[in-house]
Picture 1 (tube, helix red, strand yellow):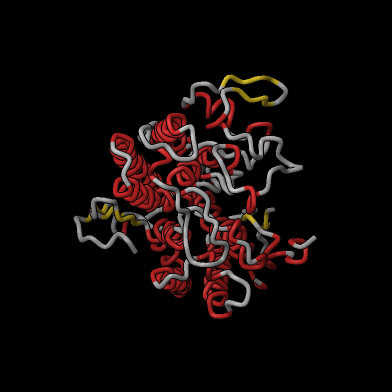
Picture 2 (cartoon, one colour):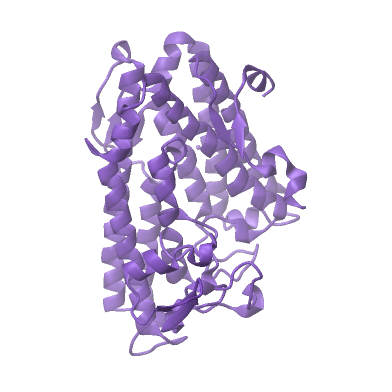
Length: 431
């Protein structure tokens, strides 16, 4: 759903990384132009995807260590690495909307929710045994040496990155058949979260990967899948990192546009992520339904951090800054400086609204530290928890209204932001 911005629409209409480090400042306010803002936006993308790749490689190292010695301690270490890998990646999501190359690619690495029965065993008492919408709902690739997909028999006897990418991801044209990316790996590391809206994440045992003390069968193939999915994630991130380097396809597509078109790309990403995706589909929808299945990181209960860093990514591109995983800062020409040149009050208002969103996200993070993760916060009858989530949604909506004002102030036309029925037409959610 798109929200087409018009003057009428505008009128009606807070961390894990705290290390100190060096700062690389590329521009001062006197030299800021639309072109310099767009170029620095591309530089931040290159840094973020580079960090996403580095942390995914670290994840592979810890997973290999776990598979070499499948203890509970090593499984915990792999889970910690997965959470760490989400920190830079979530800050990249503001690049998805507006950059077609990113949007076309994103589904390979961060698609959700997923019908996990495609991949491995599930608890049928909570998951069910079939779906009218998905013939592969409980296909269990890990337990199957062949599957019928799209009317053809596919050899699944060896689980490889190619098998996952070419045959399993969105198999039968069903978007919920998510076989690759962060959430497939998350499911393999945690297993199903069977706690509903009560505290507790997935509780998969390390012995599910132990060849000498195997639980739940097919430990050799579960190891194969985890390795293949992690290798595929890394190759996908290598592709996107290259796309943002000098001469890369995504950078070039951005810089081939006019300066105004580049600014429109930046603002499309900010507004669409804040409103339709993060505020609507990832947050408000789950709150309306009180449904933990609508939780973004539903196996690990890491959703509070994913939401925090999604919001941080929006703030990054507005302020023209990004703190890398090594603690150093990349700073340069910013949209904030460009807006301030035309309307300092509007710039100040936007920065205030970004801070309010970050504070609302931090409140959810703080609640999670006390045992109230996102799935607990959205539970029916959790009045205080529901309000924390609603505060986050409200802050994103207000932030988007100011983004719309910025679009008008900069004279940018016909920008369409993503919408969500949960915000724009709530009654449709229950139809």
